[in-house]
Length: 116
Image (cartoon, rainbow, N blue to C red; front, side, top):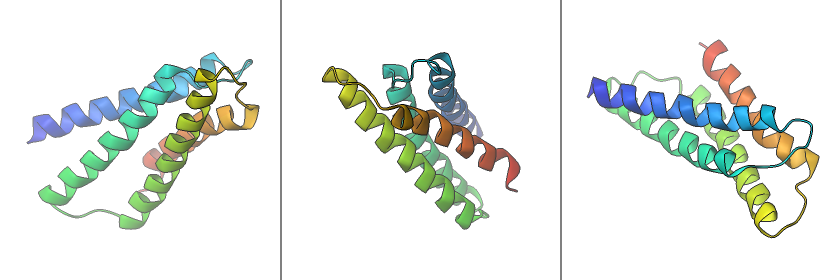
């Protein structure tokens, strides 16, 4: 079970890194890339899996922190889905929407590492 948890945590970190990395790479000309879209889905799903595995293992979680992170992850996911659909239609992604994807993911990373 530990190996599975470590693999899912690795995939979670990789997913968040693609969202934030794509945001930083396109900071001057904001958009939502396909990697950010996939990363947002990956981060959301693996985050839920991590919580489920931790609940099964010991159940000693900070549920307020998990709730805050889940809401932020959902915001990132919705913004990425909206932004990616605009890109597919050939429409311009607004600067605020593109920065919401990366900025909120960065805030979620800070919450994960600072809030104990």
